Length: 360
Length: 159
Image 1 (cartoon, each protein chain N blue to C red):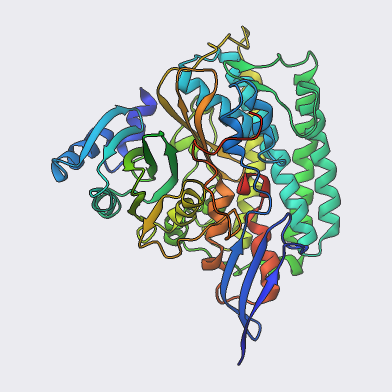
Image 2 (cartoon, rainbow over the protein chains, first blue to last red):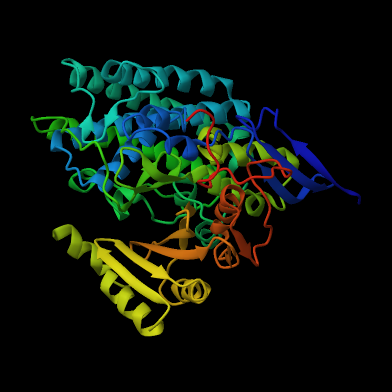
């Protein structure tokens, strides 16, 4: 049988952004795959070398449109480590609350997009509707829907609004009922199960070696969640469980994200009840010392890491971003090999791509 | 402290045990800079890096490369490896100095597939070549680009 290369992208409904997946097929079976990225490369890391530390916070929001809060939080965490800034406890709790709300919003957007990939348009409209709830909540805190510019070096920009706790609990109550509804829609769909179960198997050893992180790795049964294994903020003071699934396929990744949304709601409730009064921001120094710092967080998509070098001025000498999806995409050939071309949307959708952070 | 003791029971090696084992195996070529909770900083010689990584992966249970980053210090290049271990719950930072007139280092992509694209990106942005890499090509920029934009001698327009 003649083998040939097919370009899926840069404009393809499967890609969710600008990138290209070249697949080599033998008939309908994929024998080799090669992701091509770089269409959205903005030179983000170079850009930061010419901005002062506070100026980079809104820039880091633009790394990922789906989870911008967790990126600006990661940036502030790295710079706080560099400058040795102690964050007040109330600010840490506020950060955990907005981060978990962001995680729910991000996973909802993923599940909506996955619904369209696999022909479940009802799931798309439902999930997008509930996502708006959480965007409204975040808007009431930060004033913006997508790019928040909310964390600050040494705390957060403003305190929670007066009625936030009431609104948040109401939204969570409503949302948890809706989650059961999604499970009926998704797990009750024979087509969804046929297209995801036993498709896109990623073995735990492959997953670890190829650098896959986050829900994709936990879907392979590996118990790794940086909120637990390398706790930052106040995650070690809250009680919650890591969500894993042993099946290693697309369905397992879907299950992990569903469970994570429940767990995030649980974390938010706890953080709201435990949150102490007090200041929410301290004033950081203007210049960073001559040293290096590293911070890593559990982004909704995996392990986010920033490595920052200070040189005594008010601008970073170098800022390196480790994007979880950049590495997960490099592992895609190992996942795709042996499956049919028709499985590509199901497999790529389950990775939860975000091109802003991949190309930076 | 409760969290720490519960933490250590399912860990293979503590930070200090890792440092002792590395010091015993590499009396020269590797220097340990600092140890913190779940963090180790180290510097390694260019020649010792690959052997060190083999040891880390094979004997100490470092399963995952978090990142590989290039740094331009003007008079020299640096490659900074962040290698993390799930079983030891630890992040190891290795800094390697490279002369600017011979920017080459052994690739660790044959050991960890996760380092593959990070090394390609470092080559793309800094022009640091990784020996024995399966595919040492540009990744973000077009193939015919004739500069390395993250080097310090590449100035941004009007900045």
